[in-house]
Length: 288
Image (tube, rainbow, N blue to C red; front, side, top):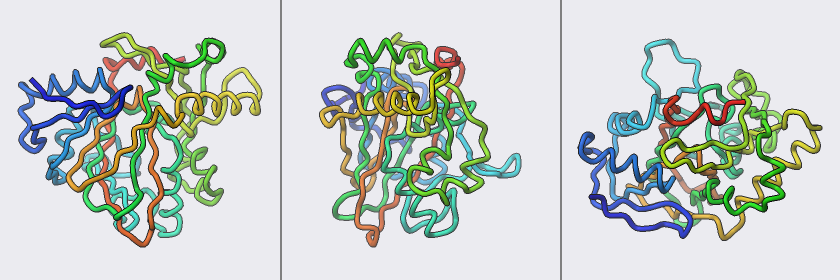
């Protein structure tokens, strides 16, 4: 049986004494997956993941997502989230890449702009500055439960349009115009995603959200911003101060996340594999 410690009163647990590089999949992974469904955020410390191991564990949650224009059959490259390394970066230009990192300071849910949305992000930490550079998360499941009935009823069953370039446009127009952010068609999702294991609803939203079907642009953005504000109040935030060897895995259906600034002259390097949701993860509940 896993040993768990709460990370936040609302959500998240640290899982102790599990070496992900030697994970006994038939024995231990079902317990890890059950903790993922229940707590939405998992922390493993003192891990030593190379790229192959990182990929293998991430694939247990779902097929690895690849946003790049890679030839068929090419293995998905691990995305390095770093102000130094460009391996796996979506944008090669240094200035634009730093702007792209700044977009990570917005409240995000990965891949809401895709027709095949994400189930998880497995983020492994390697090098960190002495200050700043935290990763912050909130539970959009608890946020939805605590939301005022008036706002909840206004939002329920609305359909939100998600666009990758929207989150980059909030940072810089030149960043938003890059092909990597404009090549995906808009995705449309209902405002809540129901977990098929426990039946719990969570607000499904991100700063990729750019409009609400059936209402004006101004009213739609006002509703989007109101919903994000409602679930990201200070008391709802878990702020993770990284240590080398930390691994975070979070449920994209039931959380939002953001980075916090750090001195950019100091290296901060993490690596990410995002996994795509399957039908069994409850996608049908969020489809319009």
